[in-house]
Image (tube, rainbow, N blue to C red; front, side, top):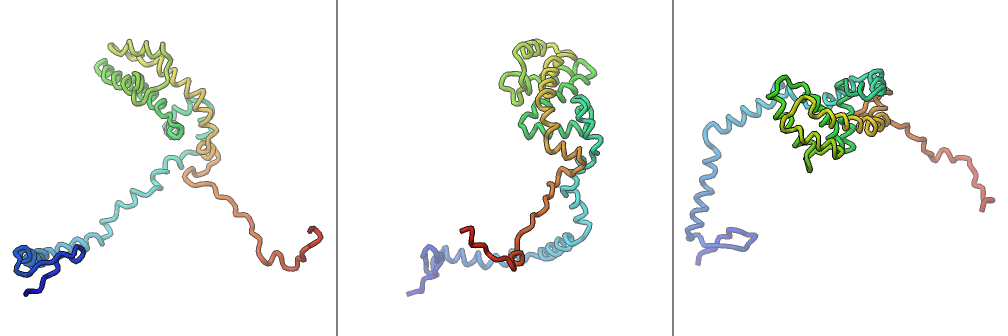
Length: 235
């Protein structure tokens, strides 16, 4: 009787050596070393390892460092940040101020207001009537129509008037809606932005990417209690 060969020990499955599938597996196992030892495979691996060790291969690694992402915020001087507090129009007129305000609105989940205002400003820069129709349709479907993905808060009359003018848009089609959203941000979001920590840090010249360090309080040690006698009269 032939000794069975254990194929899968975990499953306790065995077979005799004269089984056809055992011969197939045995021949497959023997062929695998030949496949791995194809001419030139080792040389290719060696070349790749040498390439990864070259310093020029890693020259662009510094581009992904987080310091570059905070460069714009760090470049704002306290004097410039103070001017943003003069008026809401002054804040939006400067790119750094507009970016800082947009980031603040994202923390309040109301960035659709500033995005709508920016889209309207871009719309009014259109030079031909042919450019107005596709831009007007995009703005309307994104910010104004019912259940729009970024629907802004407009009163019923303003929304109706804007909707009626979408068919034949002109430069002033969104002026009323834009002014409504502008006043909403000026009276509601802008005052909170001026009281926010990121803005106050800019005014004080602090790095917004680094938290303010607190001085560690002094801890008592055993030496502080040497020579002190307990007062049992309090008991």
